[in-house]
Amino acid sequence: MATAESYERYSATLRIFGKIEDMTVIGMRLGLEPTQIRRRGEPVEGTSERLELDFWEMTAPVARDRPLEDHFAWLKSRLLPRGFVLRDIKTALSVDLFCEYRSNHGRGGFGLPPEALQWLVELGIGLEVAVVFEPTP
Image 1 (tube, rainbow, N blue to C red):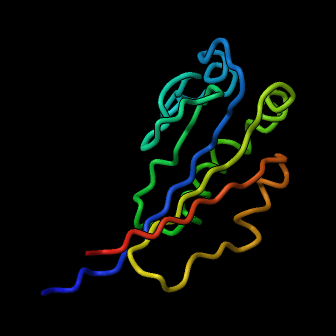
Image 2 (cartoon, rainbow, N blue to C red; image 1 turned 90 degrees about the horizontal axis):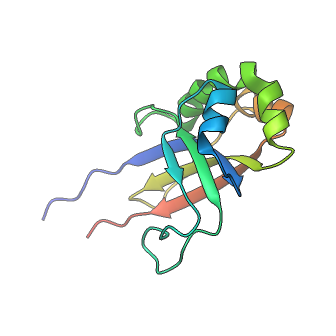
């Protein structure tokens, strides 16, 4: 039986969440299009739970096999110039950067240099990380 090739996959998503009455306002204020909009009451994927908040999300359109730093760089290039708008949005809603690291092996993980994170500090945006291990059969 052939052994599956090991992989690591990454993604990074700006999330703006809370009770959002008009999702179009966020996109208009930021001058950006969301990748996904999720509404309160919708099912949470893979569970029997329902969303308690509304989510406006923009995921970096970077290949998942590229390092997480590349995903951060794409988001930084769009968000840093709009920092004043994000800071204002943060007065009424929650804002964070949600990252995902997936692999089919239990070795290692990921790292980020300080300069990849500095812009989050400048904007006052927190970082959430999900680590998913997908064992191969």
